[in-house]
Amino acid sequence: MEKLKEAGLFGGELVPVSGSLVERYNGCLKMLGLKPTELKQFSVDGMGWSPEVSEEKDSNYYLNIGEANSNAIIISPNQKDKPVHMPFHSFDRDIMTAIFAAYEREIRDITKDSAICVHLDQDIDAYYEPFDLLRYKSLSVSFKLLNSLEVKQKEQRELVALFESGNNFIDRKVHNQLLDSAKKYGDLRSRKLELEAISLDIGSFYTKAFGGIFVLRDFVTDIIVFEDMETFNNSIKDTVHDVSLFHISHNELTSTLVNYRITDFDIKKAAKTDRYERIKRQLFVEVLGEIDHPLKEILNSPFLFKKYLNSLDIETRKRIMSVERYNQRKIVERELKMEEVVDLQYIKALLEPHSSLEEEQKELIWKLLIKIVPKDPLHLYWYDKETFYRTYKTWKPSYCEWVIDCILEENKKHQP
Image 1 (cartoon, rainbow, N blue to C red):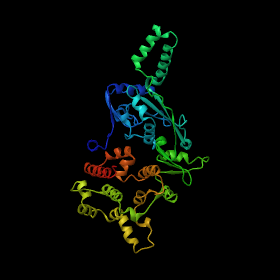
Image 2 (image 1 turned 120 degrees about the vertical axis):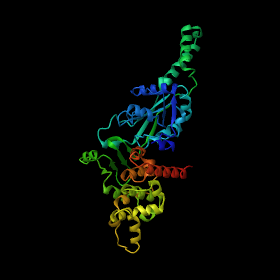
Image 3 (image 1 turned 30 degrees about the vertical axis):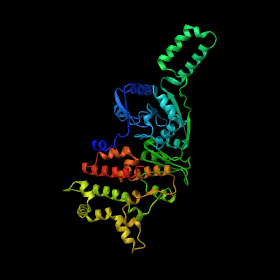
Image 4 (image 1 turned 90 degrees about the vertical axis):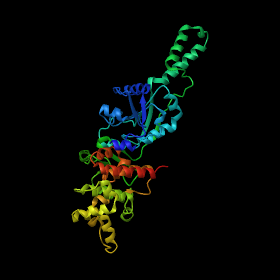
């Protein structure tokens, strides 16, 4: 993981937290019913999630109140536009973007001496079954200030009004109350501390609840895709809800995605992409035996790649090169069926979101596709970092170097 850190691909773009910010963060944790951290310094992402606190608490989702309701902590305006490293829902970062768009000025004011707890509430206290997710159509984002600063502001304004009425300006009791409030909270009268709840509509989304579920709406029919097989097996017993159910491993899922114009597949076009080359090399690495050269060198050299490809048995070679073989044979064998030649992993892995989808929908479908066949290391990093980091630890060091180079190169291409 050190190489990822050095490349800025792990724990990057975090906001450092120390000194009084730690106290405020602990105050927010207490508001959420959590024990304070004992760390004196750590870092947080755009949602206030900290990798160091997560490790301390041995929980990736320590900010959640159950699976149905998530929370965020804002302790610095620098959290604006920062990545969300451990999202529970696919729309978590969009929510933080909406919050800063609506209240950037107020957040700058509040975080000078306080912090904000953000509660993501969809009016469901707890999930009891996956079909509860079908009710998840809107989200209310509410805010609670540390030390109830907005309440203290109201009290302070009332004290000033009392002070200015009648002869209260000579009342030592009112004097002392004003002084105590000013010493503890400063002059709150003209500060922007009131944050009204934000309501957001929710369309298709992904959630970590129930072992990971995709809810796809706005298509021919509603679709729920399960990552966990046990949850899927329990859910198919339902006869009440009008929804299509799939496990992520089902071949019927990918054919449905194509038929419903959620995904598209053009094997000739796909074979010319960098994504295909990355997937092919991943499959190639998985079947390699003893090697005399570093993997990074083999994967970057056409000559070494061919050398080691030809060292594999004939059936493995056919499988690794099945896309090229199919495209070549199809020129003269018009009736040739793809599934007769092309490895099923390729057929699934080379799907892409349909061009008619909106950008937000495409992001979600890319996430679904990489979970179906997690063979493109770049897309795994982009759309499922948690799985990427877990898988990264199983790769050989030289392959890790090659993957890091791929990610850095592609990230550079996509910089604005």
